[in-house]
Length: 461
Image (cartoon, rainbow, N blue to C red; front, side):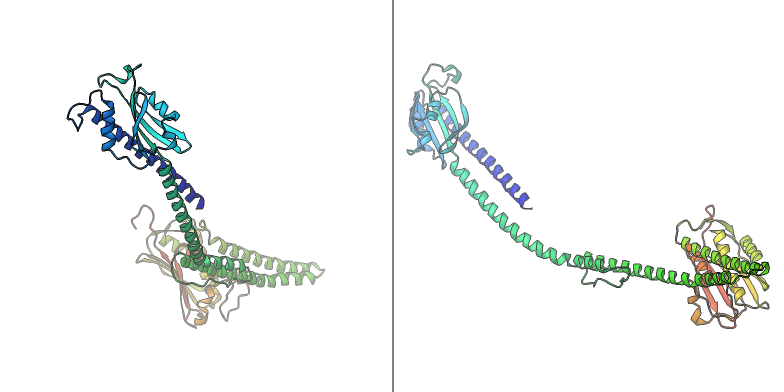
């Protein structure tokens, strides 16, 4: 910023010098023009033309014109200094100086600048012939009279330098004050950012509870709110990951213990070895199914989880009913058939309904009824599985959709992984839908997939 300010001052200085020189040139040109008008006119004292009386022209002009400060009107008659507008000429403008001798030898108009110990002198010199009709270029050999306007620029330039000096001082003072105020303001504005940085450095995988206090409003407050929201999500994700690792470890510990125990106690007879092998393979199958279900839940968050296609709701419901009736010995019933076509992932929806049917089997007796139904109404697709089993306690109705959570049941199911309903919910969410549960103890339960209706591309919405 200081470099920019100093550069601006230097530019201003050069501009002022240029304007000063232009003003001086215009002033000198005006003096020359006024002199020429007087030379071509009549003598105001006699009313007659001046003729060849050049000295009279000079006398009248000098008596009637008051030059500016540092401006000098000089006249030369017959090659010799005649008169000037000031009796106290600067040393560089004295009659015996080279500059005066240079002007005395001019036979053509000339303007320029001379550098002297007293400073720079800008001048305009206009030769004046005895015969007004004789052009200056034909006056060679004749005595020459010259009118000169000289301007000593040292005083004006000094005033410019003083003004620039004042501007520089003011600029530096303003810059210093502005820098101080900016530093104070920046410290106040950036304080939340420093707090954000400190909070970020204090966060680790063992400490995700740090948050930034929100004060006031504005962009910094919005940044703090966004940071805190991000930390809430990260903390929830870390907790979920820890819980997942704990649950996975707990779920895998049992089959691994069973496998190790049976391998360590495996007998030497073929019958005992086959029995042990069957148990080990069964437990390995359970572990494989468990891992596959975990992978399915992980894929549910990917954008390519679904492979949508056009599904006929009636045919799809009938296919589902045919598949689930082979899962167990129950009274199966097709409760309702919806009509229409929609867009969805046939494989994922089949997996969800099969999981719901298996869940119903685990909570019912062979004498109970399990029903399947579908409907398309009010812009939504409904697919439900209902049973007449033991029902689900109110305290378990929200928990059972979480991973590794199993509801209380009088029908133990040791092969369950606690992921079935979590997978159903993930499939529904992937379709922008949800799962609803209606149940009361001893009165059965109804699980319903509620999906937004997505019409086929060739049908109106």
